[in-house]
Length: 341
Picture 1: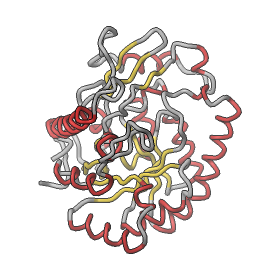
Picture 2 (picture 1 turned 90 degrees about the horizontal axis):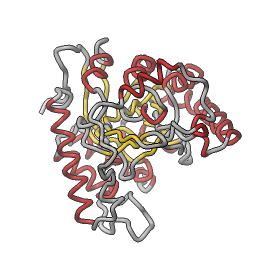
Picture 3 (picture 1 turned 120 degrees about the horizontal axis):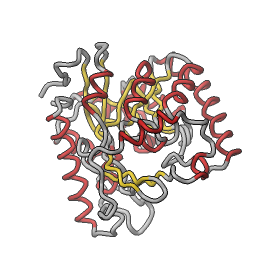
């Protein structure tokens, strides 16, 4: 299996692998600490096995797993990943502490990228935080990135901040430009919809700083309050993957990416309600129209049940099969698009 996928319309390369957040029940992350959690979650070892099964070349590792490893354990993991031809990326968050540990672990593994979530906001719902708390969150992000950026630069690392359903492209670019060259962006291909931004508008704005990609897709179901973003196999939803990578790879760059079907809970973006818009700058009507137009591909009809097996409280064996089948279909879809080999 080749390491890189290319298409005739592009000159760059894309190396694709796996992250754990589309397999949360299988791995034991979903509902951790509650009676509904998978008592036989496979953790890191099972995650690596799945990555090898699907032919992954990138492994994005949940940082709390690494926190349980000492220096010797990290060295053994580094050797194991090298033997399997898996490029490591550490997946962390500014709201997980201590932040510096993720940089230490990335250095120990020989990784060059740390994916960094910025906030716990979901569904673009800044109003749920409240104006004062959201402003405090932004100030904290700026301070943390300012503190971590020179450390990353000294180690040859890139901190790639993610659009984790909280910030739009121009806002992420502002964080990057203020903090310096060691700060880039992790593009989650499904996560412009929660902030009412069209995927291609996000890509065109953020492209100069995009360093890593989460391959995610959603089917959109409209409601009286806005729309739900419903998990589906990557490539079966509304995200325009061909257009995204034709743009990103046209300049000859090399990018890494990881497969990440959406969460086991649908995301309800209530942008038809006035309160949802609190915390956002005024939005150009043409930009909003582009976002709404982009949701129309492969729409989920309003009468269809949007629930995943987790939301429908299906038994564990159903959840395991659901996650596995969706991951395999996602990999097949990406191969069919020429984005994974």
